[in-house]
Image 1: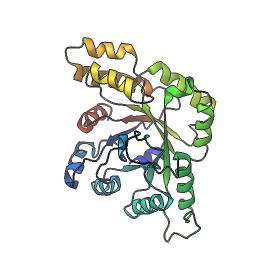
Image 2: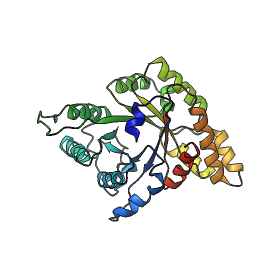
Image 3: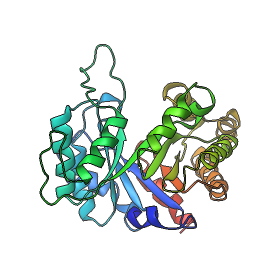
Image 4: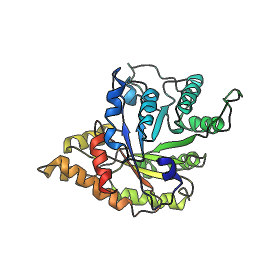
Length: 292
């Protein structure tokens, strides 16, 4: 369970995975997708309508997966809900024994897409979780039988070294009391080493676990698309060239991930990896098994 992993020593490397609910009324198929992660991953993230696309309710899927014994991290964005809806969603999660929330602002919808609410951003959500952990809603209403909430936030490693003030804002966010950070994909080990140094210099790992985003790349074409179209993704040319030159890019993508994980395990301040990618729950489970 990630609850224990978050509190354990740095020698216990955390492995989280991710799944996206389908556009379906079949709840069982969403649980079946993560079956190979049960007893393998420390937890699985349930995404919240990524890319502004409607999916089966992440809370409903999270509740069902939680019954399987696999710990759940519920992703919640401020993009689609106002304060009342967010508080109701969090209360619903707690009623289903889900208390780990990744707080996100959410992807920006296209101009011709659905209207965003954006009453709360990720920092507002972190503060809301702190308030509700203490037993109150935003208007002061007392919560009966409150449960402690464990909050996390996302980060883009690349932004620390190219965007002014990003690090300052991020340090402020971590110091708000988040228990874990999960980053965007980063296949650049040299950049991860710089990130490790940044974490240590700012004494951020004392109470927060930093979990690096990775995933089994399937082809050079996929890697190039991710780098060009997904914000904050860092994939060096050398990685893309390896995939392009390989006679078995699927195996090469898995090998690349394995090599990076081994190096990350030796970096101070890095507590684990978050494995993600479209429809690759089984591949992520296979990767984790290499280390367990």
